[in-house]
Length: 224
Image: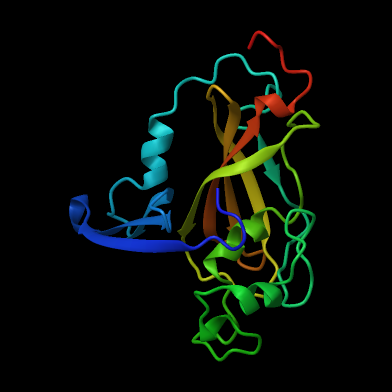
């Protein structure tokens, strides 16, 4: 975990992927060397397995579940109303900040992100880190038992026909693609596909691994 005020250093290590594609290892650590994250970036389609491909393949069977027991692999949640991220509005209960506030604070800013930016597409581009915001603007999609405390464990963004633009409406189609658990956490994997409602083309996919702490759910069986 990283809290406000902690220093974090990111690193990128370029390497050649299987099949000749370009794959890049990424990592981040705190000032004392404590690892924060590890992952991959790649340009495809022949880039080999991503970090999340490897992690999903290593997941064991979920076994008996008590918090996400009503969540099933293959379940879908398809939006009928579009989501749009503008520059001044907050983005739901999970993200009560505006895009402009985010742009005022991120260190990896780019001129194409700015309101009124001149880009090759004629409109400003959403930063990669706002794509998980876009796919979660409609609030909780899955019947996780509450009250309980959850967190994001893994995240992957795959561009298909991007980029994704600010101030443009998109539909989000969600699907549960995996369930798992560890000693302290029950978790589920989802894939959210961002669709342009005008062309019905898939623009990008966001794979998210979410966990719920067993100790945070009062009804969790003590013997488990």
